[in-house]
Image (tube, rainbow, N blue to C red; front, side, top):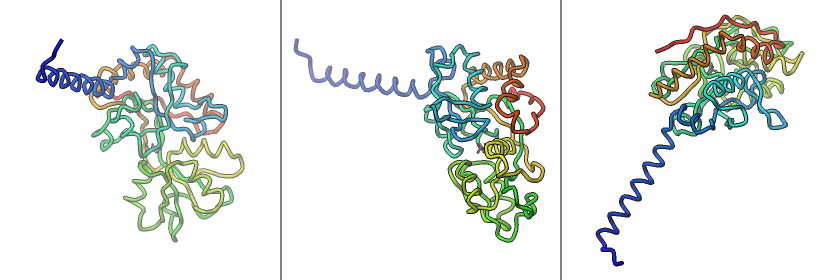
Length: 277
Ligand code: GLU
């Protein structure tokens, strides 16, 4: 059969339109749609002991990992059907916006500026910014002692780095790396004088290297960890909030904390109140 040129062009145009729809549909798939298909891709940290860690044998462990798994399970997706993807601090919004992850559980503070790009379920945990120094350091006792050109390390795209730039820039030199584990190695070698981020993260590193580091001073911000997901995916946010509430109510939240961070000595905080915005 002979097909006229105009029909062939029309068929071509329909095919292109269908392909575009398929692509767009994939990118904007909601968390609940992914879960209904049976798999989830979840962003976590790979290098934060006690919170999100990729172990040498390729398994994953930590409190955030347990929260991620609990939520997935409540959405009907079992552990073996979760793909974990590394979500460095500076890349989290982009990973969500590009549809490369369904949700992120990665010591991810809920902030107004991040809420312009993504939504958050939770909070599921509360902590605050603190400082880690070498165990024999007697000079750095808190943020106000960061003077005389001390070198402080933090991570690009994180709230603690932002806070230092906004409020302590005149006193201290800020060195920004992509991950906190690089900061901790720089602290160990003497290349920097202190590392700053959330106290619970620092406690995890201190526990990993007994006798090497210590936390100093009180926390000097409030960080509420949320589960990041695509902006506007309200149905999934509600379901994830229900899952977090169940984890808090069932005792699984305390158990996960005890198992992953109990040995760090960092005290378990009060249970947070979920913000149903
Ligand atoms: N909670 C802070 C943040 O979301 C610091 C920890 C991190 O960088 O993951 O920026």
